[in-house]
Figure (spheres, rainbow, N blue to C red):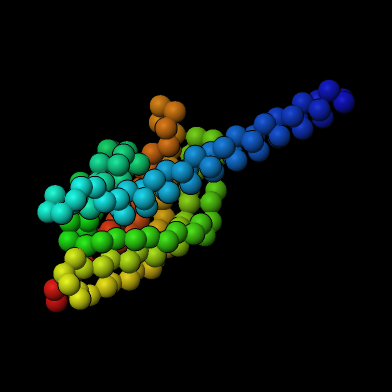
Length: 153
């Protein structure tokens, strides 16, 4: 009887550590995404804002809306300077699948001198799955959160 209880406790502890690692891995993916939106490379006229390929590497290519998201993020970083602030609202799951709600604040600053600033704040829902030892987003809602704003209007 003691052996069964001890085994159950050890399994519970191992499961807790696996979920903690999964949490850290998912947060690392989200942090990388946010950082890729603010990345600036080059100097002068050859400045490239944002790293769309790094941002999109967080997503499964099979995710519904993948192409739309990629087009939106590409247009967003081409026309504006972007910064993010993200807080976890809720998270659930195990070491193979995680669901997370993020309070995401996006500030989009026009590249035009004295251009407008657009602030967005929304709860973003992400579903993660572990694929070949890497966490990938398989669902993100709403996708249009990352659409470029109409800064000139």
